[in-house]
Length: 230
Image (cartoon, rainbow, N blue to C red; front, side, top):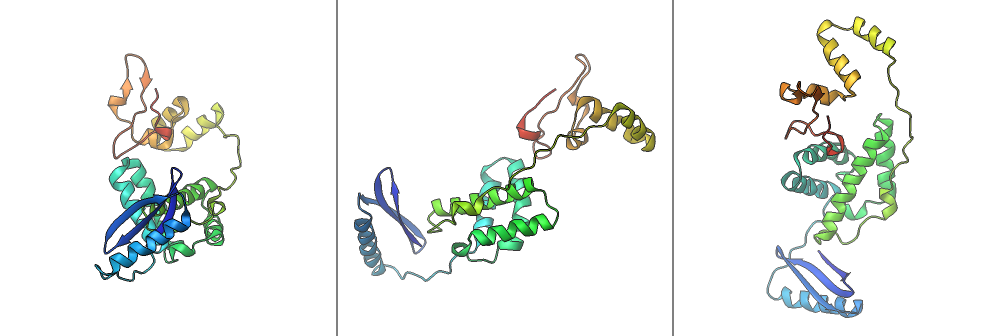
């Protein structure tokens, strides 16, 4: 896999031969750089048997990026990566990476929406796909990215969040098992999300100040937007 690109106003080439990566800044002319790349590959051909490689699939790029996220980013990001990976592999994984275009991603969106997935989730998955392709291009594993329009985000419909009235909360408390009532009361009166209630421990309760602390718990729970609050 070889490519010619511009960096900081100068043209350079990037090529992998026999498993080794070579990068060289040549000059200000693309034609000159392409000629230098051809000469370099001809020179290397006499030293190495340059294997013909199968072009990577979209699934290869997705798997590579998932491994990167798992080893370099936060645990919560790794969980999100694995979640996005499954539908992307299922619907796009077998397509050759350099053939993924606008229509492929549009069909992906349409299929996921038809499966009942929210627009926000579809946007996250397509954003993950875009990140996988960009990382592959930066590493020289992909010569050309799909058009930017392929990764266009779906428009979000802003809805006013619905809340329970106090009378409705009272009716709900009467209808559920007694053991669920403390959790419902805590969620309603403290404004907690489901996962925030489920992961609370006694160490999160500050009785002296009358506060419930919502804090990150590594490998268990990360508050929305990574914001801790009380």
